[in-house]
Image (cartoon, rainbow, N blue to C red; front, side):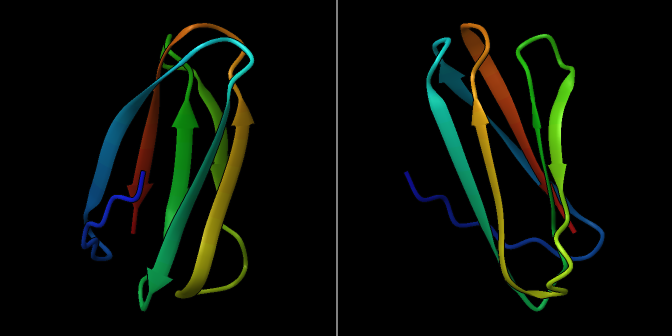
Length: 79
């Protein structure tokens, strides 16, 4: 499900996605002139992965996870 939001260097956006144990989540943040960092956290709030690839301010930031437990996983994208 594509979501489009504008993010500047000093802002962030977040959303929650319900997953069942064993389901996969693939997040792609398309960088268009702003270097982005993508963080995915477990239902208990513990960070699972943070991605800031060395491609600078252009191109995709891509994260894959496999849900270990049922619940809402948080996705945070910040500049």
